[in-house]
Image (cartoon, rainbow, N blue to C red; front, side):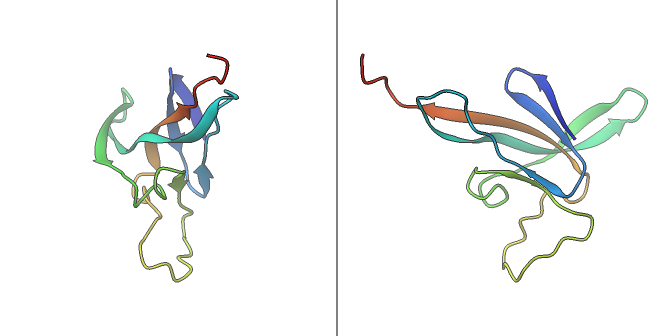
Amino acid sequence: MIIHTTGDKFLLIGHGFRVQFKSLSPTSSFTGILNFEEKEVVNVSTGELRTRRRLDGDETRSGKFAIMPSADPHYGGFPICVTIPAATRIANFEPYSLEEPDEQD
């Protein structure tokens, strides 16, 4: 499940998918991950979440996409585990894009 929470922030819940964004701007040259945080539930009755850990380039394939691993991931012989956040299956995600200057300016 992907929930658009506010502005450029999204809540990812579940397992077995990956998320990659693409800017709708025609002058965008790159879209990637600005922030990716694994979350955990602090209070079930209020739904309060807290950051368990902040993830970076190794876990996001250099900021290209967020991985929500399957319940029984296949590692394919890859030496670095890229199936984060496997423990909680909850993450906050914030994409960004780089804009190229308009040639007419």
